Structures are given as structure tokens and as C-alpha cells.
Length: 230
Image 1 (cartoon, rainbow, N blue to C red):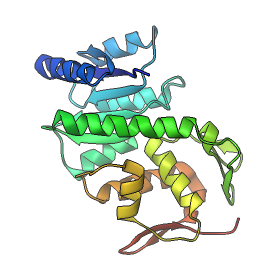
Image 2: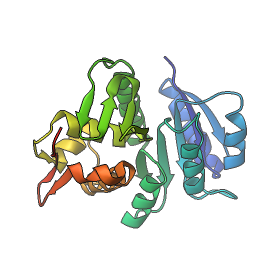
Image 3: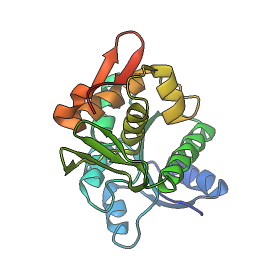
Image 4: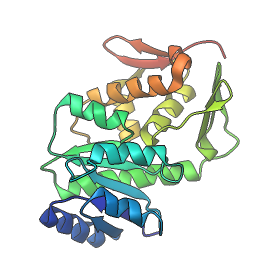
């Protein structure tokens, strides 16, 4: 399957470079100079992944990310943010808005394509997971095959990374999972952003779980575990 990627960047040379290299890797690509063009294109066809530059004219990439997460037909499509901002607070903002990944400029095309392929492998794995392997802890119910999570009977929307983190924690109830293990398993590549990335995603996952976040226990200096009564 040739995955379709929507890429938005107001810098024409970067946009053309992204489009040419991603097509060379076998992806189909539609490139846009602003958020309005991308949003208009959604009326015709939905992509399999979004690449969003942070600094855009009009609606910036952060607001576009939030908008896509609020739209029913795009809320589960993976999003990678591309930005010259490299402060931790910026990474947190991007993840809070719903980004699955975050790459600071300048970056290599090899790094970008590696991350894109890793995301598509995970999407494929989730789509082909057994629908019968229900996971539960307290009021948290997860159906991996359907990529569905409910808390106290109410459905919640998770990004791909949040979903995989929760799945790994639920599958390993009572076990301490180190940050390095979570990073290696969920991200699946040599991620140079450090284990702080895991902490930020766990923080956002806790927010989405509401009162059920109490089941995620921080093991200081080590990592996290899921604990509590079934």
C-alpha cells in the first residue's frame, strides 16, 4: 500500500525537498503552503499521515494540529510536527495538541522517513491485532483490535503513541517498565530526543484518563507501572 502523506510548510524549498524525497521512498504526497489548503483538501481525500510545520502563515501548525484532533474524521490520523523550536516546553505543547511525534529542524530525510515508516508499521500492527484480546484495569477497558478505549463506559480519544503506551502498561500490569524499554518498544527507532519524551507522553495520557490516571504509578528514577485492582 502506498501511503498518502499531507505535508504543509510555507518554505517552498523545504516543501519541495520533502515532497521529492518522500515520493522517492514510495509514498504519495500532497504538499501545501498553509493550513487552509490542507483543510480544503480533506474534503476530497483523507491522508494516512500529516507532516505539519509549526511556523505557518495564518493558522500555525500547533493550532492546525489541535483542529485535526477535534475533527472526527482526522482525530486518529498520525501527526508529526516539524519545527525549528527545540525547547522542552515546545515539545510539551505539541504533544498536548495531539502530535504523535516531533522533529526539530534541521533534520535528515533519513531520520524523517525512518520515523514515518515506524509509525506506519505500528498502525498496520494495530489494524491487524486480534479483536478478542480485551485489556482491562478498573474502569479502563481497551480493545486493541478496534483501537478503542473507554473509561467508566465513556470513549476517550488517544494518539497512536498514547494508545501504544497504555496498551503496553495494561499488558504488563504490576511490572515496572523502564523509560528506555518504553522508548525502544513504542517508538521503535534510535530516538535522539531522550527519555523525557516518554515522560511527556505519560503526562498527557494521564490527562486523557482523568480519574483513572491513578493506575499509572511513577517508579522514581526507573519508569512506570500499571497497578490497582482489576
